[in-house]
Image (cartoon, rainbow, N blue to C red; front, side, top):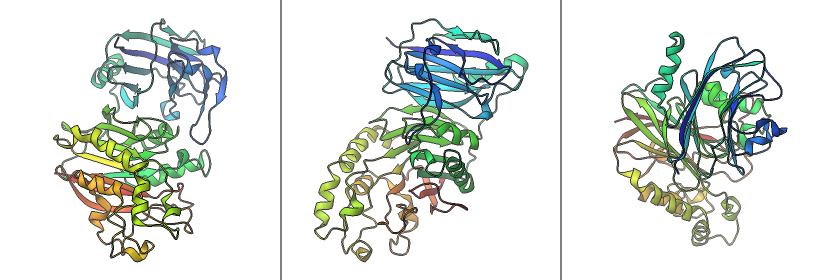
Length: 440
């Protein structure tokens, strides 16, 4: 049976609360203990009952709302920052929709879509009744449920109908305006240099770059914080993959494994859209060590790639095939964990252990009609090696393993940069790749 519904309510809190009270829920939220989930691949406090089947909207200690969805085994959480607080004396519209058919949930605050979550892998049960909060410090009005998915425009109208306020809108991309796309693995949620300091540095790097869209890897719970700080939209495919974007995601593409590939259609405005996929390939085999072994050969390195990354890439390209020939611009960007055949050429072999290697992952991308932006703009691998691994350890093997690829039919590449500098310390073990386009 397909499950499609929308929940909307108006909420106001008298004060923040440390016990994460529910604003509304359809499960036994208070049966769970409060736990710190922060680890290398997760972030934040919540109740353990978030794993129970059903949904909950709760109040965080910082005064902001939070959303949870569980199926008894797995859970999803959206925990925004104080930019979405409801304890400021004003009424706020909180809404979300679930579409089990398309495996996605849209989340809204004050009439504006703030996030799109992939539901792939969750099988929630929604039969329990919906219960607004009975907390004396939480006030809820206008609770409604519809057994259909409301559009962003309908949610925005509902916000405006209450007292004439208009929902904050996302910018539109003007024709001819540069479009800046970043690929960046932020390293364990960007928190290696501190839970707060590290994430703040990630935000500063993105803001300073002027990136409009970030294909992010190792998001690990930091996505809402980064998107909120920038005023951007969040698309979350999995704990690993996200897209942080100046432009909202209007739909997602449920292809391959959620940990390896996450795609969304972004609304640029004026009925123009962009399909963007955030990608992460397997970190093994460890080519950094393998290429330096005395017995290393091009044939052996290529054979090892086919055990993981090359086979993953082939399957991903097969899944992407329906998107390759349509009328929408298409970008695939991320951490490929593999060098490029465009770098390991015969003429540049002195940089690469005197070997020329036809690395299969990049070769497959080229064969499928994708253009490597950095190497297109900087065609000489000797003059511009473009290393992205690793700015945190200059004594380790350096190579280019993070890429922005695009289909040239609808995009024109202008610039490409590798970013690896911060005024204090670059917060990731990967450099970021920033590519600038115009839409044809």
